[in-house]
Image 1 (tube, protein in one colour):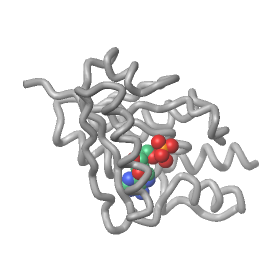
Image 2: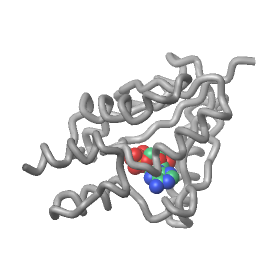
Image 3: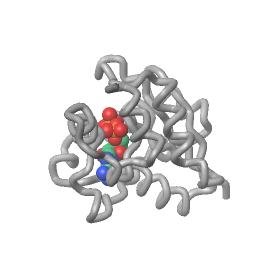
Length: 159
Ligand code: ADP
């Protein structure tokens, strides 16, 4: 059976925590689509094209992982991608309420959709794109938290 899963998010930018989840999910499914949401309302630091380019570079070594941008509701894109499985990462109890709400809404919109939660690895439970943006924005070193192409993108963005 061919199982296609989608790991959606804003990825502003992709961190080592995202990479860990994508890596682990890629072992569970035939194909994993990392869906990068335009998320205009969140006013992302990096434009969509840049977020996609960074994710492509960071995930290039995973042969069954593909990066795709999307706009609008995830459910509409799930149909287009021929997938009914959504992968999300769970870091802490603080993630739980929002993530369960999101999973329930997606199921209301399309009853075929199932959301699978993957627990964050211990060393990444504290890590979020927003924390990394804060550190980089204040001239801090983010090289322990993101891959080199993302560090470079921050250096360019804040130069
Ligand atoms: P969104 O705007 O949809 O929350 P994010 O890019 O912030 O997008 O996160 C995408 C997914 O990755 C979410 O399920 C989030 O919980 C998960 N995630 C983010 N950081 C980590 C991490 N350090 N470890 C595990 N999962 C993470």
